[in-house]
Amino acid sequence: MLKEIEIQNFRCFKNVKVSGFERVNLIGGKNNSGKTALLEALFLNVTPNIPTVGLINYPISVDEVPVTPPFIRLSDKELTKAYDRSHLNNRDREVLKVFQIIDPAIESVETFSIGEPTLYLRKKGESCFPLSLYGDAINRVADIILKLVNSDHNILLVDEI
Image (tube, rainbow, N blue to C red; front, side):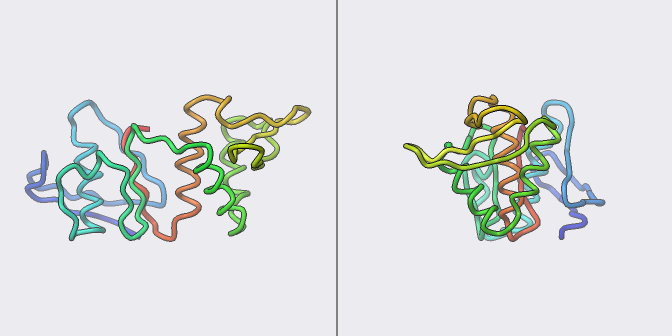
C-alpha cells in the first residue's frame, strides 16, 4: 500500500511530500488548491507509462486501478454486475454495512434481472426499491464502495465525490 509520495515540478506542485496514507483517504481543500493534481500524481505514480494529458477526464482503468471521474455514473446494469461480483467473492456484507451507515433501516441489498438488471435495497418492514430511487448520492456511494470491495489493488482515485 502506498504510504507516501514526493511530487516535484508537477502541475501546481514545486516540491511537496505527502505521507500518512491509509486504506481510505479524504483530500479536501479550496478550489484550485491542487486536489485533482494530487490525484493525477498518485495515478502516475502507479501507472508511470501512461500519457498525462486528460487522465482524470475519462473513465479509465489501467491494470485494474480504478479511476472515478466526477461526471461518470455507473448504469443500473453495471452497478448490479459489480454487486453480484462482490457477492460472489463474499464481500457483499461490506457493501451492506456502508449502506447501513447511511440509513440503518436498510436490511438487505438484492439484485433482480426483471428487464434491466437492477440493484435493490430493502428497508425493515418495507418492499424492495431500486437503488436509483434513493438519489444520486447513494448511487455514487454504491459506485465507490463496489469499486473498493471488488478491486484487487489498494488504490481507488475519486475526484469530486
